[in-house]
Image (tube, one colour):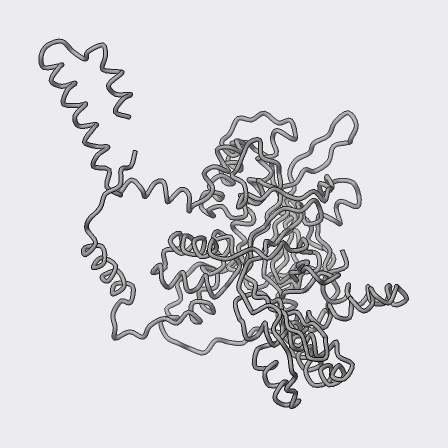
Length: 370
Length: 170
């Protein structure tokens, strides 16, 4: 238990001044601008937006600057800011099939309509550090090819779905659950699970996704499609009889297909896991899709044997702001609490040294202290 | 779902050409707003000056920041789920001639939201519609189309054809 303390105001104020000075670093080095972070550390910005669960590139970049590059701290700042704003409404579901595609690959079909578009990827790089980046050399302009036109690219799962080989998207237009309005409760439906995963910690989801590949809740995944690019966002506004376009956001989508499931009524077909993330966040979108599929164990009648299939375990621990809050609160003063433990321990030792060993009522004392 | 970009939107236009007039009007205004929300503040401000438009208006809702919860669909096309929030700036103005303009944009920018609302109203007014279309919407639409084209041609240059190597053959 935590008991409040007071005092230390001057020390705290000075610690924050020292922090500000450390954040700035050597004053002979030019200060980073928010725009530079926005433009040149854009994947860090994307991560803060996705796990902060707030799409605003400039705010995320500001948070990264303020947090000295500590992304979990930056995510915390964004979450805190979010609580100061009213909610105007909810968007129409975004249409990833209408995306202005910047990257689109499939590990399952080499000749898919619309083609395999590598886009700006680290894939196939040699992971050799580039000393040239120490200098501010001009960057070669990207190559261009003939304009393929603005025809929308079908999602791979829709192509496969047409042949009935893959399970269809779950239908329904029910109002989805919202964990920002009501605390998580279990069992959690897939809509709520996807919301929690979309804002979950990338490292946590990556480790869980990896565990499913290594044999814990093995589900034989293939990356049917990964796509990244901008989509339109529209909301309903009171007083207007049509959805109002707000602008575009960048998202990454991952469609995993996994081994078959059939039943007495339905022939065997591929099952699916889905990932959708703010910004360019491919690793997380893939991890999310693996976790989504693993968490469908109950629905698909699979044995629940692994951590990745346990929705209470996964969803309760995926949020890094909650996790860091509880772990890091341990460094706040717990003097009163600890004093009680000390006294209990001293009494137990006194009893021990008196040659009686732990008294029968030792258990009750410990419970009282806790 | 009609609200998707580019080619699909054109197809919808063709399909709904003889639909009822109210829907057609909504669709046109939505298309105008989708151009206006992508306009830069300096494009909007510049057009207002260049057109010498100094419309009289009152502010019905002062510009304010807030959030919209964005939704995705399970599997891309299934039931909706909450993806995460976006910041939004919104404002509403009314011209002296009565047209009500809405400025709802992504991000936090009161000035740009105000200008979007003003141009939404000016476009609705018969007196200024043509000038708004010719002097602002056309150039913004051309710029954004060119930006989209740049994305497509650079992406197209990374198109790859993988060949499958067959094992155990000469």
